[in-house]
Length: 230
Ligand SMILES: [Mg+2]
Ligand SMILES: [Zn+2]
Image 1 (spheres, rainbow, N blue to C red):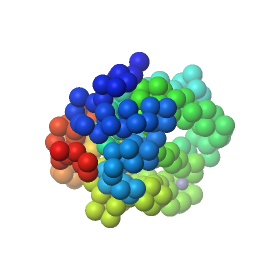
Image 2 (image 1 turned 90 degrees about the vertical axis):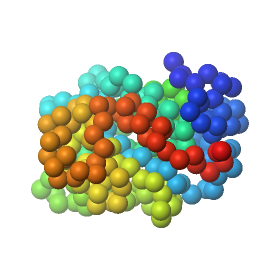
Image 3 (image 1 turned 120 degrees about the horizontal axis):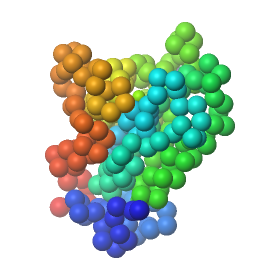
Image 4 (image 1 turned 135 degrees about the vertical axis):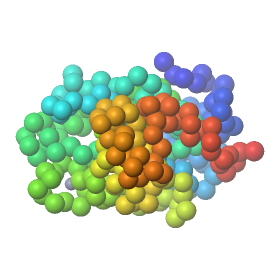
């Protein structure tokens, strides 16, 4: 069920109302920012880890569509961030592909389901980047390396001084975020609680939030109005 009814807009910002009315059928952020009179470059970007942030994690990997279950409030949180002017993308390590636990077709089916649920809530993912490699492959994309994040930042033509965030439930998410010059958030869902004390000690600027919904609420309440708002 959508969190914002058509025509009512977002309670937190004027942008949601403008965008929602202007472009109900195509809920893409490119169209949203155009509708609100902003520039075509992105000035507010949030990159999310997937497992443990958007959906329940498993130490045995998420190997099928049946094993993919969204966390409470996560899908609506993404839609709410979109409505308040944030571009949202995903960067996820998926070494289960190289390990032969599941195929690329399965991963695509999971991402189709995830995208559809977010669209039904009135939101939109601007990009999904995954790393299919093993740690021993020493690729440039597997977090804690920042390759997927920098790809997203470049691909979405993010402003040099954009407000950029990386949200994850692992130490490696935080390290990738810092390497890509993002502000960082550890959520306590998934594996997050295992890393809380180490993140507090090593990366004290990192926000620690109960879950994605709590992060969205805090960010929206602390953010300055974006272009086109007053
Ligand atoms: Mg994770
Ligand atoms: Zn990789």
